[in-house]
Length: 241
Image: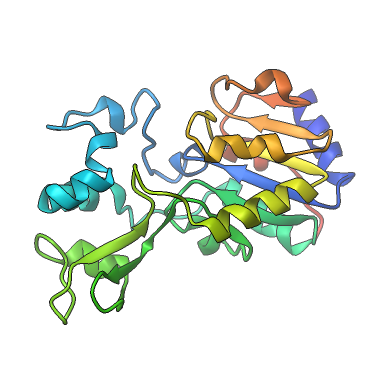
């Protein structure tokens, strides 16, 4: 309880908060992460998820990529949880300036967050590789085999696959907001996926909070470490509207 009180105090005393989140923010909404004990890495496939979700695999074995992608990556019935709603509420107060996320599920926006920087893209956006036409996730999910545009082109999800670079404009904006923040809350990430994990190095303030169910490589850097599910932490925080 003492840790929650300290977090509350830090939030109350801050005016420029940035939240940086990973898969653990969405696991409480029923979306599996990769690295936890019951995450995707511990399930049985012909190839490990990291291989399937690579640019090379997408090009060489597109049909198999989409079989896995539709089965495991499109959790379209998932709903935002307490963490998503608390962050959206905190943004409305003017204290939270941005959410920087490694997630691709769109749940922050579904909860009402406006300034969301999606480092790894979104499953909700899909584009024809030939004509650029937009398709939603439902179209991709319901398509047979490889989703195809009316022009005949192949449709690709707007997500950053392994071997692909991050969107530079999104990355630059994430660096800017983190540099300017007087408080950085990092939640639901083990801080092992680069370059995203390296963003923590741009924070220059003295209110660095790490909230994760397990220890991270950067715990020693933090001013406050809370080893609990992020939804349960945020459900205890009072946010004045």
